Image (cartoon, rainbow, N blue to C red; front, side):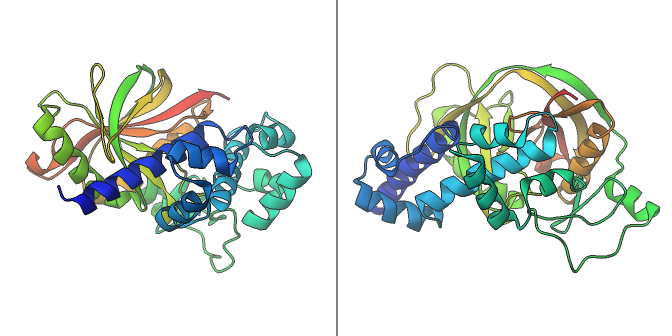
Length: 314
């Protein structure tokens, strides 16, 4: 590996440490000098490097992640008050939160909570349970005025599969993060497998996961954070762009699927359709997919997999 590649990996690793720090400390004040310290850069150079590599200034990134977390909480749980959610997401006052939310989503937090929830997705547009086009990233779909007929809606969401509530275990992971459309996660797996194979971390028993940190009904597709992961035992030393992570134990809605690459959207729609009538709601944790085969070895190139959505009772 040449010096240029080593330098790029080191810079990427430092910025990913900052992104993890931000995500873990959203409820606290986040100072630029602290972020620079986490990255081992001076504040002046850190601001320039972060902006170049992430595509947003540090302040804009922190504000967006806080607002999108607040939107997920407003969408998924009707019990916490708006002010409780604002403070949980690191806003110092309800007035500053209200102004920022209205500016970013083009509606108040109260209006956002009252909107029909976008359960199903197709072509980047979210639809409510009855097939009506609703908001995307909080902004009204002014140009979409049609609704699915019942046949179209059934074709969009119905898959014959087993879904159940399960207690899932803790899993220690090594992962490679990709920011962008989730159908490009294969590029991240290429990087991860290239690093893991010579270290003896790939075998027939290795569990492979994709972890999703953002909701496509709230976050723009090109800013989605997705982790390509391997489950590991013990303490694996990582380097460069490969990082450690973990999944906590807890209750999950788990669906079992055997699907082609073009059916992932339909599988996720099926999960959220089932969830809307299950007596459960999403909880504050990241959903993930577990793959049980190499789809290229399947006679029909199908993924044998589970979709796992963290849940709690309504």
